[in-house]
Every structure is written in C-alpha cells, then in structure tokens.
Length: 103
Image (cartoon, rainbow, N blue to C red):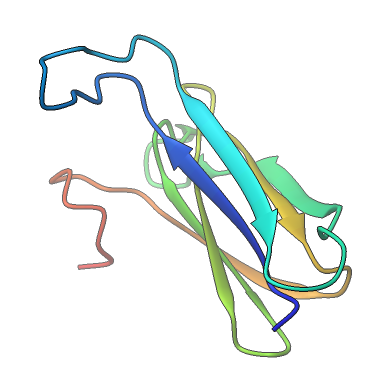
C-alpha cells in the first residue's frame, strides 16, 4: 500500500504487429496515497578513467530498504524520480560488459 511506481519503456520497444516505439514512455502511479514527488539526482563518475560514467546503473536505497533504479545518461547524469522524501544510499555501477550487474 501507498507505494509510487515509475515505469519507463525505452525507445525500440516493438509490439506484436511490429510497430516500434521511437521515444521513451513513462507511466507513474500510486497504489494508495498521493504520488511521491521527491527525487534523487546527481552525476556518476568513472573514477578509474576520470570521466562521467555514461549509462551507469544507479541504485538509491531508502531507510525502508526499498531500492529505486535509474540509468545515467551519456554525461553520467541521473534522476531517480517520484521517491518518498528522505535519505538514500546511492550506488552507481559502471557496466563494462553491458549486463547491468555489479560483477
């Protein structure tokens, strides 16, 4: 109850009739109360190479242990939208093998 979800469908999504979506679509909904309006934003840096970490996976974990996920853009910038206000532990992972896992 009372959880806000943000679902992002990236460009390139194809339906059963071979229609391809050329832009991202975002749906935000709540399972109870109002939609959360706070956000976590920043820049992920690849410290080894000394540059912004393009396409890094960002995880923001709140005090309730819920983890929210975002993907950094080509300049390493990220936004985790629609989260409850509070403190978060934020971790960025630079994917060298494109599997979006911390390995």
